[in-house]
Each structure stands twice: as structure tokens, then as C-alpha cells.
Length: 83
Image 1 (cartoon, helix red, strand yellow):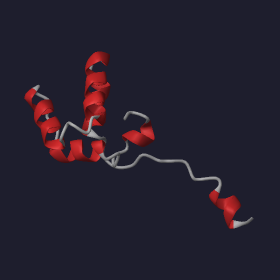
Image 2 (image 1 turned 90 degrees about the vertical axis):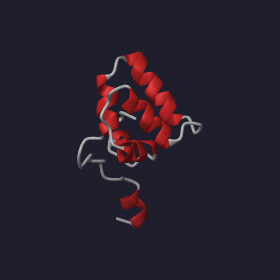
Image 3 (image 1 turned 90 degrees about the horizontal axis):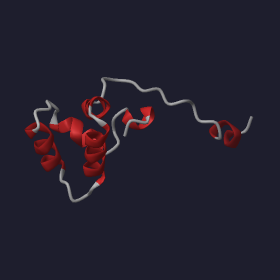
């Protein structure tokens, strides 16, 4: 088998590591709230610190690093289709 053929079939993505706090929050929120959070996370006008502060002001206990990882697609949410 050639390298081209081998590389044309990527291995399946396996989600590893701890669950993303933002992903878990998105799954627990009502649809309208989850949509608002997804929209804000995708909006470059929302700074990560401001997103974190807004989420925490509503009583949700999420780490700044969780917002950062989720915003930068560095968590397992992309692989799981949650983002």
C-alpha cells in the first residue's frame, strides 16, 4: 500500500481526557440558552475573559481555561459534535 493510500483513511477520532466544562454546560442548558452561548462563543467581539465572567455571573462554575480551550476548539467537543 502506498503512503497516499494509507493517509487517505484517517483513524477514527477518539475523545480522551476529562469532559469539557463548556460542553457539559451546553448539554445541560435549555436549547435557547445553549444557542445563545454557542453564538457568543463564536463571536470574536466576546473576549474569553468576558465570556468567562458572563457564564460565572449566571452561577455556572466553569474554569477560565475551559472557556479558552472550548473557544479554540482544543477540547473533545469538536470530536463529539457538541461545539
